[in-house]
Length: 272
Length: 284
Image (cartoon, rainbow over all chains, first blue to last red; front, side, top):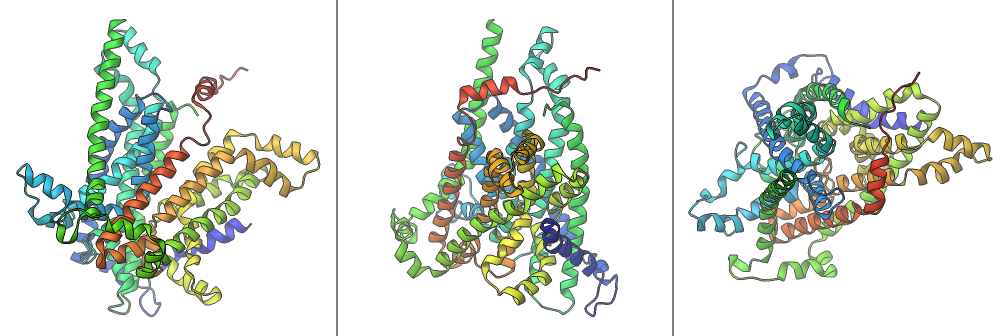
């Protein structure tokens, strides 16, 4: 079947190249040197910062995006509001990358709209340098595509909430709080956690936004892999890149396994 | 009854407050982009120069050849990638559903695998593969489509799978076969038309992904729209920001228009919603 031939060449072989290459030295002899190179402070810092950035933006994005998804779901199904927001979020979540980074650079440039607005209300943007720091500017920009993604993945779950369930709660004397605490909350929890994990991997594997925002520095793991590919400083360095790539795959695979398990649980209450 | 109406009112207020706040959050940087492109030289005054340049196709291709090259490459890739994806996936998935149901888990696993392999990792692994591709067929930017198909696999698989679930492929194909149709006719005239919406949404996802792709193109030193924008951003930020904004707006308009296609008019939709099959109770 052509399908299997194709995926073997363009998916399985690349994966194997990474997995095997991570354990080979420059002369193709097996070694653990690349893996032990992962303990270099710079690489460890890249991993830690990537994980922290992804976790914070995933949580923030999930909470804000979750509220947004609920707000959108209360609109009439098929209404313009709903279509408008799902389309907007679709664009921002998938289309972003370079354009998003530019949006923020332009807005926070010396004469940019937001710098001017903020300085009018007495807040200094500090020359806009904070925008290029991984734990401030990058987080803000990442949120800008995490929230829309949350809307897209979480909307089906909130739409699955039946009005009858709320009515049943009220008939039994429950308040809005009871409804959220005892009915909607537990039903939505697996989807919510699952979506959060998805946002995590999304931020963790993002490359273009960070690259466009901080082209020179390498605060994150994907950027480090990218620079290990494009700069051929030392021979044998490329296999360290493979080891870092393997490290990423391991992190993402663990998270996705959790996600798959939760997705199964979340499906229990959703009619198909 | 008054409790119900206060509830509805509260819900409406909550909805509008949330939506307005978030719209402001989404809108401000975009407005910032627009404002930036309208700034006159040195940040003084307003000018439409940037947009005038952008609207003038001949001037663009003369002054910014990289942009033109990247744009054409991206458009080409956006056509080729969904095509390869459909040719690869639709027959395979239909065939697996009809004849080899045992393979469905494998196909699903393979299709969802790219979710755990970030694009940047794929680049690392694809380097030797592409060395062969270049060696065998030349180093045109178009060959990026082969890698892009892998990137879109999970999304395409999901929507095609949903589409296939909704129709009874077995009955349809058996009916067609018994009327003397060849397998090609079955695919082309029976399965595909029934999968219209799924195929459309799968293709659209692929187009969006391809137009926004940066990682692979940039690391393989190929010029697509995003790479051209990125490189232009260093020398001529205004035109580059304008292109970015235009791309976002274009994407939004297409998605918004798409959201009206493929769904029936609201009335019919609501009836269909009512009729949505509930999980049938097993009656022995």
